[in-house]
Image 1 (cartoon, one colour):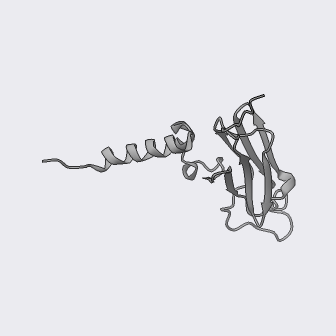
Image 2 (tube, rainbow, N blue to C red):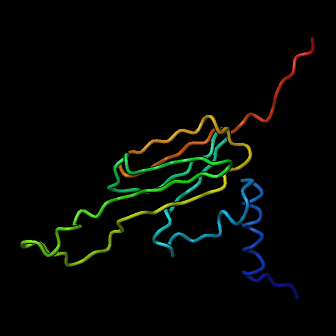
Length: 144
């Protein structure tokens, strides 16, 4: 009798996804939900580009840093604690604190088919989107 177990099926699903995106598994292996210092992101793809999407609510554009080194993208955010130095002064008390302040970052390996000269970023309503245009793999050569 043949049976499929979840642990046998799930790895192959991820391997199929990796092959279709041409992105190595280690890029997807970090779970940002367990690391408060790691930015959560979505990576989507269409025929022309990849787009990395980050939630950065309440973060000023000037506090977002994006750099590319080789095939690695680094996105970091430094947000200040608006209560720093105020707590305990006068009548100000912080009763509950859940929002993260300080430095958070994320580094990802970019696929080989990204045109490194055409990376663009925009931030609107607390969402940061970084667009990576794909290189044109097909080239037409004219015979002289």
